[in-house]
Figure (cartoon, rainbow, N blue to C red):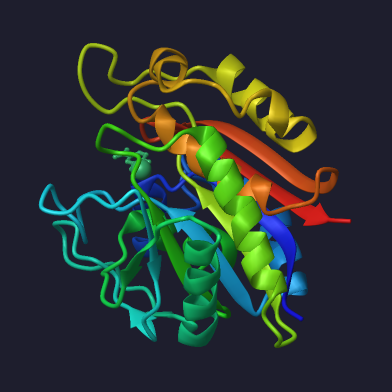
Length: 279
Ligand code: DHB
Ligand code: FE
C-alpha cells in the first residue's frame, strides 16, 4: 500500500530560485536563508520519498482568466518549467506519475472533490522553487511529482477548511493505491506578503509564527480563518497560506515536528519552512 510519510511546508518565493540559479546563495543577503534550509535538505535526502504531491498555485503561467480552476491535478508523464518572462528556469524537467495521479484523480472525484484533470501544464516558480528548496540543484529531481494546483489568485478562492479536507481526501486516495510507495505531500506559498498596492511589502511575523505553531499542533482551531482575515493580517498574497492546510490535512492529527524555520526577509515575503512526519 502507498502511504503518506511526511508533509513539508515551504514558501515559493521566486527570487530564492533565481538566487540559486545565479550562484548567489552565499551572499550576505541569502546565506542565512540557505543555511536555514540545510537540516530540512538533509532529512529529505535521507528520507528520499518516491513521490511528492505538491500543492501549489499557478501565477498566470499555465492558466489565465480564460480558465479558472479551483482544484486541478496534473496527470502527465512530465511537466516543463514555465517561461515566466525571463526564459524557463534551467532546472530539470518535472517527471510525473501518471498511474498514481489518475488513481488520485478518480478517488478524489468519487469522494466529491471535482478536480480539473490536466494533461499539459508548464509549472512555474510555485512548483519549481519548492523542489529547489528540497533538493538544491540535482541533474534530475530525485522524486516523481504529482502537481495539485489550487486557485488562490482569483476571487473566489476555496476556503482553508476545503483545502484541509482535500488533504484528507488525498490521504484516502494514496492509501487505497496498492503499490508500496512512500509519498510526501508539500504545501507551498506564503507566508505573509503583499506585492502590490498601498501596503506592498507588508510582512506580519506575529501572524506567521502563530500560523506555523497552530498548523502543527492544533490545525482545527485555525482552519476557519476567513479570506478577509488573511487579506488583513497576511496581505493580499498571504492567502497562499491556505494551501498548507492541504498538506496538514493529509497527515495524522498528532505529528512529529522534524524542523521549523522562519526568516525575514526573502524578497518581499516572510519565508517559512516546516517538515512534519506521521507517527
Ligand atoms: C513573490 C511572488 C510570489 O508568488 C510569492 O509567493 C512570493 C513572492 C515575489 O514576486 O516576490
Ligand atoms: Fe506565489
